[in-house]
Length: 75
Image (cartoon, rainbow, N blue to C red):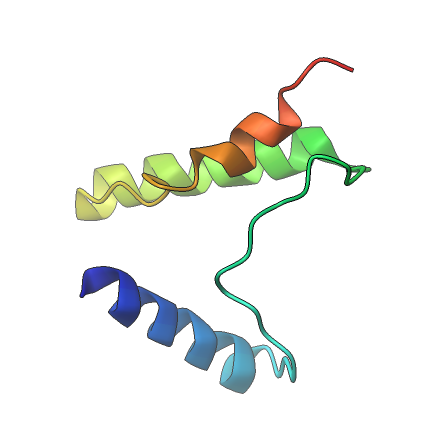
């Protein structure tokens, strides 16, 4: 239930605040995608995870660790 509420809030924020017209929340990264700014992405996701853990006692990326791990694979 919490996940659906979080997704709904994120969708509303993206549409109304950031004016995104196309939003996909339930996606998984492909192993074939090249990331141009891996370090920046990893830093942002780790900072968000720490912030939500400390501020809200919430494991933000509990099921999405593959998002961070896809960036840490050997090249």
